[in-house]
Image (cartoon, rainbow, N blue to C red; front, side, top):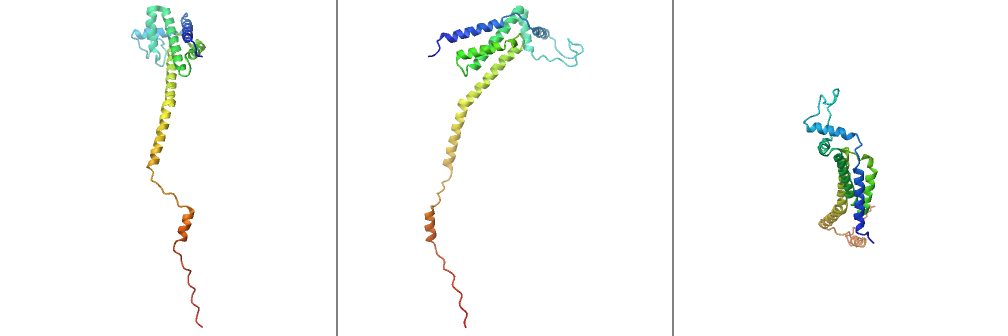
Length: 210
């Protein structure tokens, strides 16, 4: 007996509600402030190099590896303040939930996939902060799902086709080989040997005269 139609919808609603509760909370991580500062600096036309604009004694130029989330976060912060940053975090958590469900759905039903994804989300709660790494988690889940999809496609579709093609090549190769007559039986070989020419024994040498 299958699950009732409202069960997947109810489980999905519960998972989304829990994700929103996890996402919409006060901003407590101090890391977003440096990212917002970097975003504001880049939006104002600033560039990092030597001498460093913030660290006078720096010996290497700073390379902003997360400049795009910093700029987007600064744009949201200038419009909606800290609540906007909290909602950005919530959107990232919902995106991660969707990516996890998409990955798990390939090997499980909807209810199981949603519950497993929610458990993974709760387990990763400490890492679901306002940092740009949250977007990296989403991309990582999508990449793993794409890799699993490609592997499943190879196992279920391409590998049987390759085996079928290999068998077809083997049949074609066998039909193109020249026919070789089987060796004659041992009895026929004995008859051929017995019916062949016989050799006379050598004549005895003549006896010497007295």
